[in-house]
Image (cartoon, rainbow, N blue to C red; front, side, top):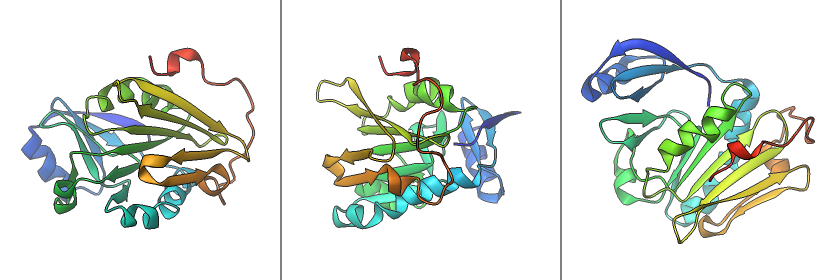
Length: 205
């Protein structure tokens, strides 16, 4: 997700929803404060679009829906609303709501150097509050690298990492298969690491 820029204003949730309906900019909302979402790069948009393109048919067959970019998620009702880069929900109530997702099963953020630490840490801590959430995926736009956090039966979060030209992310309970070559198709992102792997403090505890 593009870097959020703080907007010095306090709004109620109803005022926030009304603002979003007439605004050309997107804003995340936390405890009455607004954070305007900065524009994303072309490669950022291409990666998110590729993830959607290779997923739609499989999800439709399961009665699930996928949305990219402009669909709001209620992380905490009346307190915290965000716009993940990609959202999957299999809940019938979500499918009847035109503007809001309350029970996502999978969230994706496409990371950049300016957002990577926040997406790994503070944002993930907030997303864990969602009882429906089973999968959180972070896709780098600097190299072919994906972090997949999966909620286990015991409620812990297990981390799987995929990288390089032969990497494939498979999420079996949603029947999703994401070869990294397809995720990064026509993005110009180099496939190999240049630099160290993410350190342990960026991983789920």
